[in-house]
Length: 223
Picture (cartoon, one colour):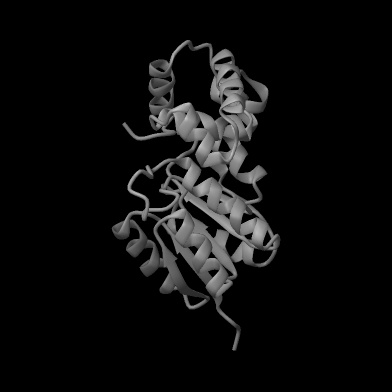
């Protein structure tokens, strides 16, 4: 008998997670061994169960035990990086509503093996799971097309941000002060100020209000 593909399913919406659980578990090749609803829980469950594959939303809280934690892309990105730092051979498939760059680029650069949108057909999700488990990568056609288009045309200004700048941008868009961002990222306020200046310059904005509006427009934080 062929061993099943052991999957950790991560999404902060219980109803969404339940739907994907039923779909995946109905396939005889897949076994959902654990679930998580935030980045910290995803990392803890990965260490406990060592699944063959992690299917993860991108936008989620880092840790819901902290009442100050908000839902944004840092939750997913941080979890991906922590999991891959713990196990460089981990297989992560991102399943999200975010279709536009810089999200796919940052996720794939972080080491994820696949990127699908939640608009994908059930058959495509199953195909991605099997492909990645066999050692391949899987990027949906709509994402691949957008990545190729962006490489040949003028990108959104957000795509010009580095990984660190995007992380700081997201924290600032959540309403955190420079001091709070510095504490959360274990950096000095002077360093955060310097990054903030570069972010404003790259995005051609002059204040936090413009930054928040830009983040909402690009789906980086929720309104």
